[in-house]
Image (cartoon, rainbow, N blue to C red; front, top):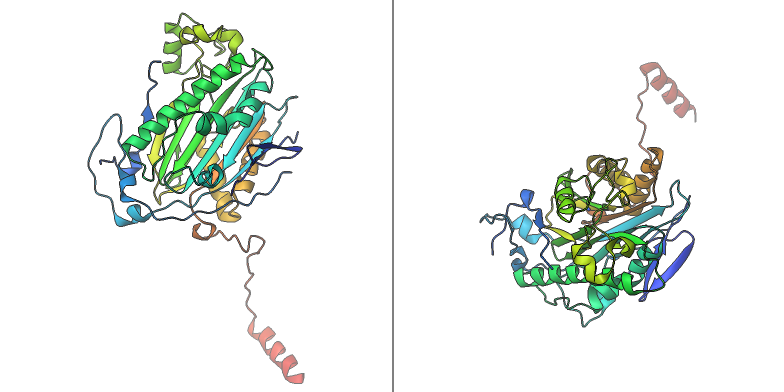
Length: 401
């Protein structure tokens, strides 16, 4: 079953998956609470979706995750061992206060079913992407249209039934290759303007493994025990680590936070008018190399928010998590939560396009107290008491009847 993103004005089929545009003007295991890992770059209104829910038996070998910085043995209780995420999602986009819609997104809640029986992977499996374009919609539309080809068909994506170290390493290498290959493809496609580019944020779920890859200023935020955990780093020129890298390439960051006075991000796909040519891309301060963060999902993890910078320009990660968490307890609909985040950003006077994906890791019936997917329109009951005089009159009336 393939679930697409909502479309307000038109539907665009891509590889038999419905992707929609909504234009309405991120062996040893570390402790779960700390298990967010960064992998450093290597040299080189309005629509409703029905999402598939997947429940399969977990393999204990999926617990074999490694942290690049530190690895420590720890005991894992049986609740963690038995947890299997049940994937469901919703998304919403709005053109915002600008003239052109340059955002695109893709969401597939059952990746294995879409890719077919020949694709072997840990279950459940899902794939999500947010593409925030600039310099026109060409680059982001190209990525949305060809994402599955770059990430799964044209790369040597690993196939295994267990998310062990070998699978994880192969998956990161494959995703990195997809980012870089797509970047070169944007430069070689004559139909795409050389001034058009896009940031890319993707999330892959295999079993309990969540892998987020990011190049740009979109953001993924995980809700863990009600707290916001950033699963991506915003690649902006004023970020200390990014500024140091940019300046090492003999480039500059102006006082307004723009790369060479031109671009508000330091990582993006496309933008070949800045990069120069594919042969010179390795020396360009603007790169397509993604950064990775990964974690092993547990019962403490409630949902993941993926959003373009139009959301984060006016909202903190903590505020976004609070809005979605309250929404799930009120109506338990990730689609409505995504819309509520977009509406809140508009209320706060954002100046950009808006796109949000909300991915839940539990079934509707498992949401905490206060949520009901079956009685979302129910109202609280009013309780009242009668005075002794009123009670006597009521009894008298009933007796007369």
